[in-house]
Length: 129
Image (cartoon, rainbow, N blue to C red; front, side, top):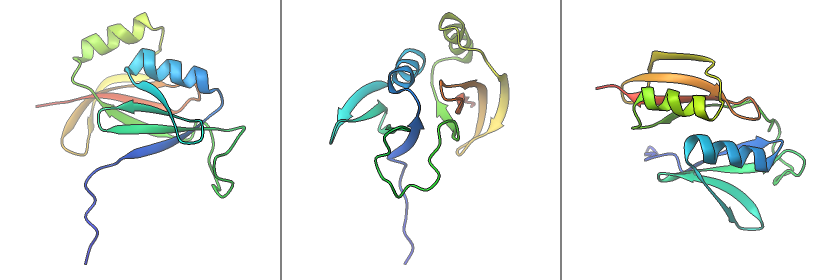
């Protein structure tokens, strides 16, 4: 038997400043901040979420290498790339590289890259036809 994975439910980001992180992902990427469980924080988008762990207060002491700024994430948007770029400019978010074509899980992407407040590398992409 083989396990058949359907989708990713959530990822965990370790963050230095919960409010700065939530502000960035809400303002720039339209995610919704919610609390759950024992006063934990998550950012929701589509059918997924990012759980946030405060670097100063680890949720699980057994996490061996959780560190702010160690992630590289790609988010797909249907917002046209020229509108993404304009929005990033309004929000004073610098584009690190792009736009350029990249290989995604289901096809070719047109992507730009930015950093979040912890310097995680964030790819914002359109799936090309």
